[in-house]
Image (cartoon, rainbow, N blue to C red; front, side, top):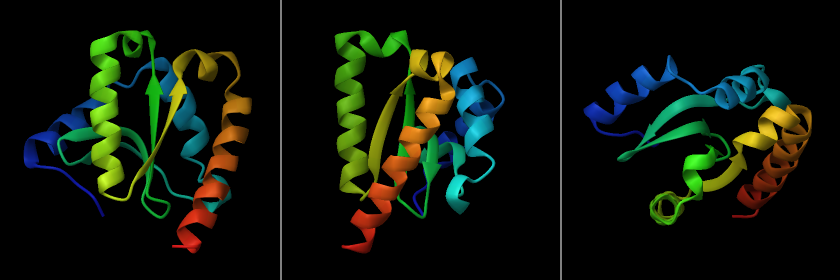
Length: 124
C-alpha cells in the first residue's frame, strides 16, 4: 500500500471534506464499489494526494479541471504520473467537464479501464 508522509496524510484528510463538485459526483459512483472494487478518495501517495485510488488495481484516477490546462500544471502532472508509474501505479485522467456532462459515460469508461488494468496486472 502506498502512503505518504504525515503532513501529506493530514492534508489528504482535510481535502476529503473540500472535494470539488466533479469529484463529489464521481465519488458517488465509485463509493458503491463497482465490480467489487474499493476506491479511496484523496489518498496520499508519497508527496502527492490522489483524487481516487484503487489499491487492488494500483490505479489512480485524477479529475482534471480547467487549472490543469496551463503548461506549468501539465508539467507537474507529468512528473506526478512518472512518480506513480515508478511505484507501479497507473494513472487515468478524467476531465471534470466530462464528469459533469455525463457521469454515466465516464463510469462505463472507468469500468473498461479497470477491466484492462485487471488483465494487465494478471499478466505481470
